[in-house]
Length: 99
Image (tube, rainbow, N blue to C red; front, side):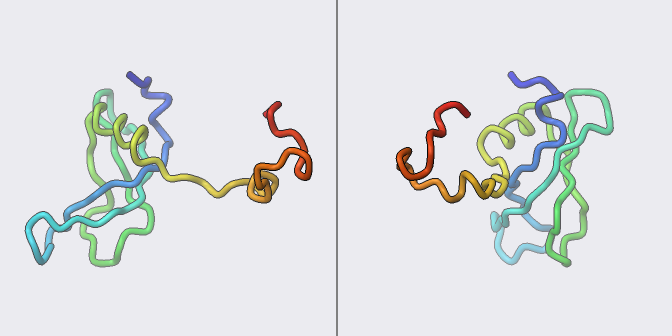
């Protein structure tokens, strides 16, 4: 089980069913940042750049839902330039084992 401090501030992908979906069960993926404006076990996932037709700015998550989102659907940040150029050959790229 993750601590609230490990969950708060994480960016995750959420599958959201919009209010005006054409088909029942139609979901889209939206980035969200998790915050905790109330006491545990509730978290709030505020959508980051949602489609304009979204009516809600985010959604409430239980501790378990927030934890699963962080573990299974994190937003992966871009690699740093040094790691991005690494092709797996320690002889030409240096030894990265100490990182």
